[in-house]
Length: 363
Image (cartoon, rainbow, N blue to C red; front, side):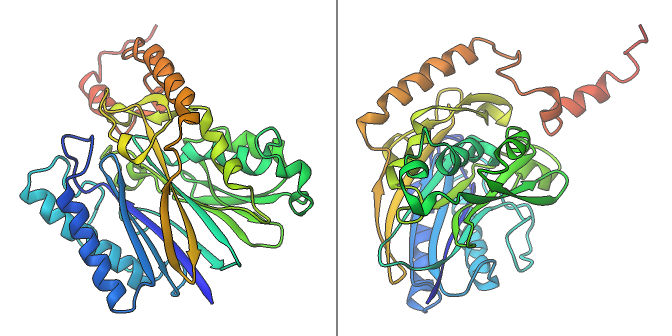
C-alpha cells in the first residue's frame, strides 16, 4: 500500500498576541479531522501546534497534492478562523490569503510538506515544526543530516548510505528547481542552499528515488506581496535503515543555528529546540522555536507522538540560544539583528521610501 503522510500548517489566530494557540482552535481542528477519519478519507491524524501555528498531520492513500485532503485542511482552517474571530484572537486567519479554495492550498497561504511511503517493516518518522522563522531554516539541518559525516556517522560506517542522497532545491523567487547529487556536488549545492532566503531544500531522496525528507517551502510574503507573518515551516524526515538514525536526524538541532524571522519576521535569531510545553515564544516574540514529534507508522496509523526535544541533552543548545539571542537583541534595529534591506521589502520599508521620495540628493 502506498501511504501518503501530509503535514499542512497555518497561522489562524494567536493567543495571546503571537505566542500561543487557544485550546478551542485545536479542539475545532480535531473535530474536523475526526469526522474525516470516520468517513474513511483519512487513515489517521494528529493535531498539534507550535507557537501560534496549528499543524494537521494526516495519513491517507490519496497521494500528494490531493484535492480532497487539501480541501479538508482548508475547511478546517476556515472553521478555526471563525473561532479565532469569535475570541478576537490576534491575526485571525492571517495565513489564508483568499476566501476561495482553488483545488490545492499551495500558493494560498498554508505551508505543506507531503511524502509518499512504501511502509517498511519499521517506519519511524520525525516531524519538525517551527515558529517565528522562514522556510529556509531547514537548509542547514538537512545538509547536516544527509551530507555531514561529523553529524551522521552512518555516512561513514553504514554501507547502505555510502551512495549518498539527492537534494531537490527550490528557487522560491525565480520559481525554479534544481537537483544535486551528494556527496559529488556538495560544493555546488552549498553555493545555493547557503542563501536560505532564496534557495530552500524541498526534498531529499536516496539515489534509488526513495523520498527521505520533505519540507514546506512556501514563502508567505512572496505569495501575499506584503508581510503578513513568517512562514513557520514544517519538515518530515524518515529515519533508520537506508536513512539517518533518529539520533542523527536530531543532532543538527544541538546547534541553535541563526535563522531569519523572530519579531515581525524581520530579525535574525537562534533556532531553539524545545519540548512541546516550551513552544510559546514570548521574548520579543521569540526567539524562533522548533519542536519535533516522533511517530512510528503502523499500517498508516500514527503511533505516538514522542516529544523528541524533551531531553536534557538539548539544554546546552537552549542555553546557547538564549546567549546568542541576547547578543543579537543588543543590536536593536541595526544589522545583523535586523534583516538586510533586500529582505525588508515586504515590511514598512517601501512605505518609508515613498514618504522620503524626492529628498534624496545626488552626491
